[in-house]
Length: 75
Image (tube, rainbow, N blue to C red; front, side, top):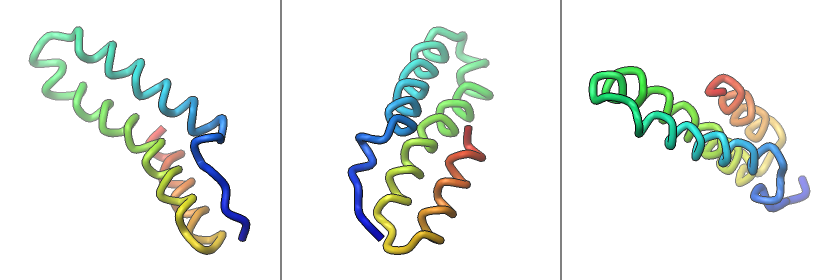
């Protein structure tokens, strides 16, 4: 399987932008909202790019596919 730089993938770049936008939105919420649903949304958004990156470091297509599916579920 050919290796590629996941940072050049458009989907990774979009996931990073989404995560940054969500951080900016949630940070302005009140403490209760941030502490409950806000933290969950942030973790989910951060996990999209993290799973794309993790999958790209795997050595076979099936492992990569698993992490892409996890990233999609986080989205």
